[in-house]
Amino acid sequence: MQFINPSSVDNGEQHSDNDSDSGPPTTQTEDLPSIDDGHSHPRYAATPLHTHQEPLPPSFWNRTFTVLCLAVVISHLVMIWTLRTDVNRLEVHQKDLNSQCIHVFKMVQDLKQVEWRMVPANV
Image (cartoon, rainbow, N blue to C red; front, side, top):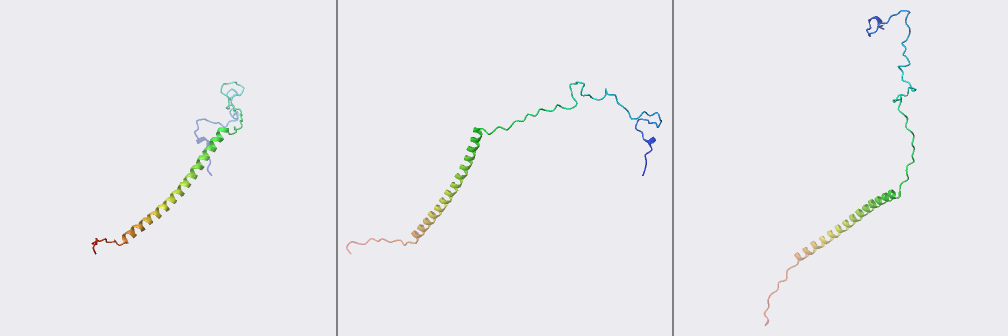
């Protein structure tokens, strides 16, 4: 363990180990801030007053607006669902109609053409 020699420390103050040491330094009471001084700046900030207010119940218009928004969202979801089902039905109908048209065109192409000839009337 190493000890520091107090005489080698340069801290700007000279201490003496005499018996005439008066003890720890004391400050005068004028240096300390006082609450009773009546200064414009108190030691601590003023405590704000407690103002407890109950939250107001939702008003009629608030509740009405909320219900209206919820109804609009639900109606949009229902409308999208019904539109999807209608589009699916139309796709099935279009595929069926397309397959019928293709079948008819194939039948027309496969038919033999009837040849009409002019026959003399005196035969």
